[in-house]
Amino acid sequence: MELDLLEASLVPEHARHVKAEAREFAQEHIAPNAEAYYDSGDYPWEVLEAGMDAGLVAADVPEAYGGRDWDLYQILAAAEEFYRADAGIGLTLQLASFGAEMTAEYGTEAQKAEYLAPVGRNEQITGLAVSEPETGSDLAGMTTSAEKQGDEWVLNGEKYWVGNGVEADWVTLYAKTGDDPDNRYGNYSMFIVPTDAPGYEAEHIPEKMGMRASKQAHIVLDDCRIPETNLLGEEGAGFYMLAEFFNHGRIVVGGQGLGIAAAAVEEAWEFVHGRNAFGKQINEFQAVQHTLADMRLTFEQARSLNWRAAEKVVENEKAGLWASMAKVASTEAAVDCSERGMQLHGGRSIFTDRRIARTYRDARIPVIYEGANEIQRNLIYSQS
Ligand SMILES: Cc1cc2nc3c(=O)[nH]c(=O)nc-3n(C[C@H](O)[C@H](O)[C@H](O)COP(=O)(O)OP(=O)(O)OC[C@H]3O[C@@H](n4cnc5c(N)ncnc54)[C@H](O)[C@@H]3O)c2cc1C
Image (cartoon, rainbow, N blue to C red; front, side, top):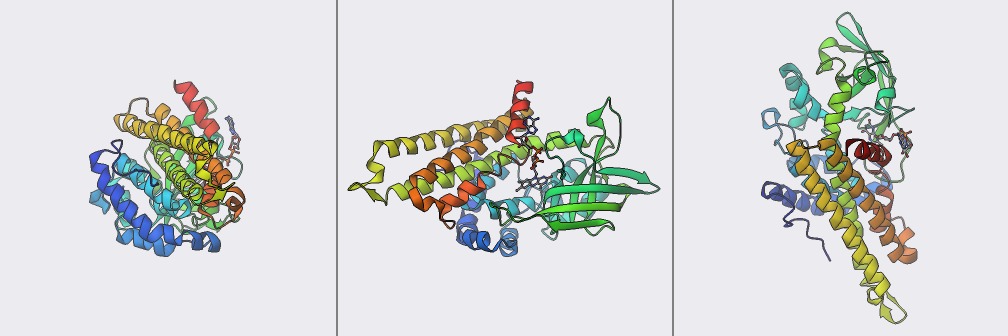
């Protein structure tokens, strides 16, 4: 059984061809390489380059800067397909321009020409540096600082979990520029930080159990100097820029969860139709059928919500509320479907090379990144 993610009426017409392209690419380049990259833990440069050649990397960058101007629906469509094939490689493909959206939105013409355009042309890759070793959830509690000295900003502190922090040419970095206790959210700003800036050091964090084909870094900023022109947007507006950015990002992370959930549903379906117990194929047991029915329900409910939420975000109607709801529903659908799929696989579920085991490990990640689901629930409550 293959889930019909392509023709479903949920996906707007203009996103369907992107979905078809992403699916074809995923079948040819991602799925066949998933296991090898999980085993080696190497950065999948070859798949990334193939994705660039296919026009599927940094495709959300505006056309004027070399991209394809994909909108949120199109990015979501691609996320489902990439992650269905493999979440680790899927993350690397989507990380290549992660954070650059803020340069497209708030950057000066000079910043766009110098930083955004090489990403749009696939000559450079980027990343977003927000989380720190001591906190990822409390955006107003982060301590990395930026101080203006002459015509430079001087950055000090540490960032953790930064996708492409080692591999990227530049990162969009969130740092503290004020100390006003009465305006906690106005104390932060965003910066464009080239990874070869003096005082920028990055190393890979310890190996992960999931999404091993993506790489995250621990960055140390020790009097890291960048030109004053690398402030992105207004000084003090960083928190609000990030909040807006996350509204889009959480819809996409929802799509990532849906891709993982789809893989789990399909894999479980295939397994139970090829395994016998007690003289029957195990799909003939009603309990097994109900488990599959529940998996399908969980998946379809989350998917409907996610695509509806995408529309709400595009229309800017309570965008934060809908983005958080989509993120929670879809990423938890991935956990739920993977967990049930594992059970249906019996002992074979725990073989590390099984696709179901991969979805089970990978599903643990989107419930955390782009804001842990507890934070999303706080936002859902406070914005309801
Ligand atoms: C694979 C991976 C890739 C990532 N990529 C990036 C990246 O590219 N850039 C980047 O900046 N970050 C990235 N992150 C970091 C990610 O955003 C953080 O891990 C996440 O925001 C949670 O932060 P934390 O891990 O510090 O957990 P903490 O903030 O320490 O929270 C730990 C737990 O405490 C609970 N908790 C915390 N606060 C609350 C609250 N207010 N209410 C209820 N419960 C709460 C939750 O259960 C939460 O999971 C990545 C993480 C992973 C795992």
